[in-house]
Image (cartoon, rainbow, N blue to C red; front, side):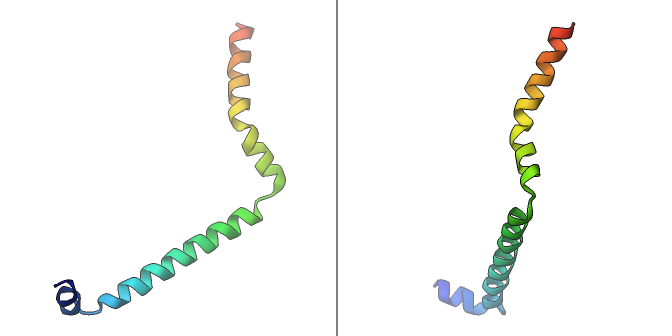
Length: 63
């Protein structure tokens, strides 16, 4: 039954190819972006949650 439905839809097989190309290109760009991030930026990002908490606690201690 599903084969009949798929055969009646014209050009259905191209959707699989297009979606696979989009998937591969997206993750290839994501990997390239991740590799190209500078180490200093990664260290800054890793400290961000702690920096926000320490700044807020400093505001309360100054008051």
